[in-house]
Image 1 (tube, rainbow, N blue to C red):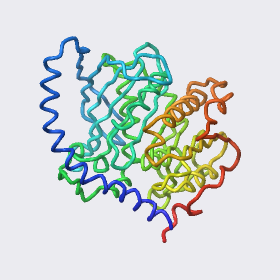
Image 2: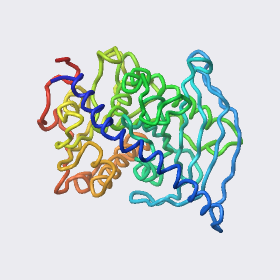
Image 3: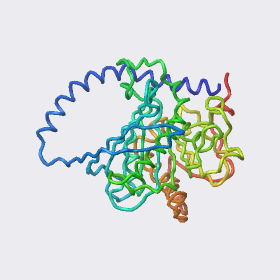
Image 4: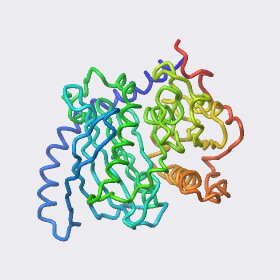
Length: 368
């Protein structure tokens, strides 16, 4: 059972949500009227400021429209850091024209001054970015600027800027992931360009020399490709955290961890009881990676549950924070004593040459 089955299992899980999602669309439309009325009448809400800015990206790669940037000063729940967090929204469009790919991107950032490392997060198939908001807020509260694009076609409907039915029957769907490495490189370049423009909300907040990637499921596949695959990598990336992901060389092309690709530190996270993404796929990518690398094993959690619900979500948030603190913020002591944070009754961490054996096929890119 190989990578084709692995991807089919992801699709099957997503399809089970479509019926529920269709009902939710109707209910959400009804509820939104009530919510709008309540919010409109509620006093003392946090004020919003809106600024329209111009972002430029190297025209030899892609182009973007001028993004509108909005910030809010709400204080989400935080379990890792102490910095107050604000959000910004970039309206990005890759390849303007008939083949355009809208990539609306939300940014969580510490409200305190100074340049911070950038983390770009990639969502899992059919999972909205909002599902991961607690994790993303945690990382921002710990001192990172966190950008999360919404990918076209593989986001739950309605897809950004593209027609889709209430049941999500988009002809592209899962197959569109082949375009996501280019999307991710575009988002990285766009956010860095935006942060370099004076007069907008993230100006001067991003350290362009310290960029990390983190992604879940298909988003982990894409993050790994842009960090370590010879066909898709960008040298801008300095470290990567893959949450229940896999290598897909026959899908993306190229090869992983080849001499032609600059080696980057890796954190692989995987639940041993994940029935959607094979645990052995995380072992495969971990074992093929050079040092430094870390493997965080969870047990007793589902494909999503390990990242969306406590207590595992808190452990993941803290371990990922320490990993990027060490590799991007260059706090060499960040991973010292990591076992005290990562080793619990349901999780453990290791950094040897190979990961603990896990269930699943030995070659995750093979076909049946």
